[in-house]
Structure formats: structure tokens, C-alpha cells
Length: 190
Image (cartoon, rainbow, N blue to C red; front, side, top):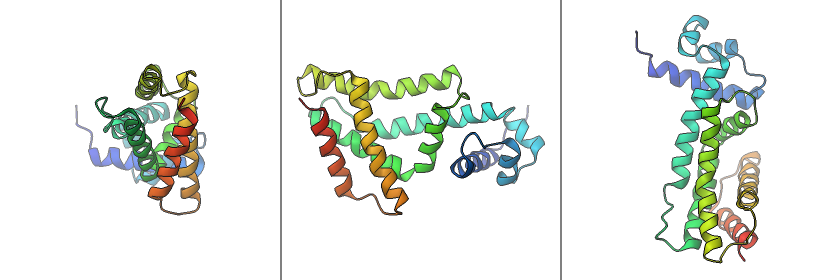
């Protein structure tokens, strides 16, 4: 079996991300991906047998990458509030830097394209923040609300601040990140 060219896979992934940002996941089709990637349809189908296979492969790659980047500084030996601050900062910086990739991830999760293995990565990604929130509840620092609600509150606010900076074509300032963390902290602390 012939090895697949990593440069072609990168071109297919880049074309997919660009097209999703332009037409959305629902408007994505293999013909447009092939054209944008500069790859013939026969070659494209050698690499990915279907749109679903391509979406799942790209989703898995991106979800693993970003989960690792977001959680890399979390260290339970650090003071609790500092861990939360680092998590929010990592999340916002990562989302801003890789906005197109996060857009693809979000659209994929809300679609019917992901298989059970891909969907499990979404569950696994939230396990870290849930564990951190439960630890805060154990230490009586965080409200005794369902962790899913607390996480949604944190992520929702951070997402909107990043999206606003992207819409306005502005840099994500350290002040914005700090304000976001303070609002996040105020909303979850006891």
C-alpha cells in the first residue's frame, strides 16, 4: 500500500477549514475541497472515502491538539484560582489564534457527521474542566451548581469576547483576558 503524502493531507485539511469558514459545514462538498486543495477528485477519494470520513479525521486531529494546548498548564499542585485563571487564559488565546479551527470543531459537534469515537473526544475534552470545577466545589470555592452549567457559563463568555475581537479585527488584549477571567470567577465562586 502506498503511503499517503502528508502535504496533500495538509492541503485537504486547509481547504476544508477555509471552505467551512466560507460556506459552513452544511455547504461543504468534496468537489469544492478538491478544487481548493488543488487535488483531483480521484486522489481526494484515495485519502478520504467520504465527506464524513474527512470531517471525522480532521475533527479528531484538531480536538486532540486543542484539548492538549488548553489544558497543558493545569497543575493540581497550583493554587486553585491560579489554575482556573491559566485555563481561561489558555482557552481564550488558543481560540483566538486558531479561530477557524475552533469554528470547524463547533460546527462538527453540532452536525450529524461525527461518529461515536469523535463524539467521545468532545466528552473527554470537557472532563478536565468538570474535574477542576468539582475540585473547586470540594474546596468550597465554587458554587454547588451542576458543573455542566458552570462550564457553559465560563466557556460562553470567553467565546463571545474572542468572537467580538475577531469580528472587529482587533488583537485579543491581555486586559480582555483578565476581565474575562474576573467575570468568570465572579460567576462561579461561592
